[in-house]
Image (tube, rainbow, N blue to C red; front, top):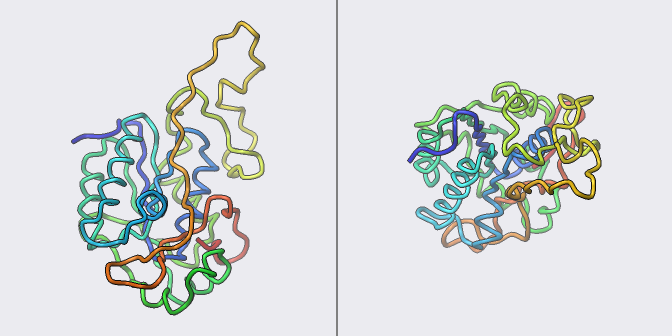
Length: 260
């Protein structure tokens, strides 16, 4: 069933735990502001359903429905997660085929050693460690039926964010829904938004006492959350799918992107 419109953008970020997906998703949200929904696999599978990641799991359909609802409500969507090809590819391929607007998929091809290094700096390091990360790691788990842009480990957070913004033309996309879309907080704004006038009509000038209150946009999907749970059927170890929470994302400095 067709979803979204000619104006909506669908951005899908895939890769192993600790590869940088959530940091990039948070940076995209900061750059665009209101009107970009963040659909996180961690939030829906682990926090809402507390479900193990297995073939045919309920979270696969819930992720699909959430993304479609946001697109049909005129939101752009960024999805992030491990999204193992053997379990999630059919859903992702259908979503790509059904989306009326521009869809771009990105795979974060990061070595095991680098994901371990980044993981050591994350809060999730207290929940699971190198042994679990090594067990869960899947090298170059690309989709076979969907074209993906490969992001290498030498690409910094800033470079990856700039690349996606350029290729998706996200900042030029219509501000939808039209009300209450504003720039990101100054502390986290992307350089592309620096110096821009506010796009949010609600912040243009103080409203008079008799001015009608504008309709508030539906809230976007929040970023990932709480503690780890087993990731695959039959596992007794912790869940690897915990990428960095949005609050930890920030601009990168140096050759390597911020951990996610």
